[in-house]
Image: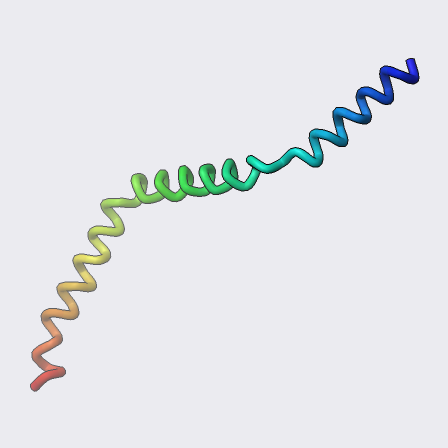
Length: 65
């Protein structure tokens, strides 16, 4: 029984030390979430940018004289 607990503890410690791929998984998950948000809110973002661009181009004549 003691040998089984020792092996289990050894595997747990090995698992804690071997976390090299965790950072890449986190980056991939963040990218997936960001891409999902872009897909969901694409039309709203395009509409907002178009409104801002129209406002800039319409009012640029009053700035330049």
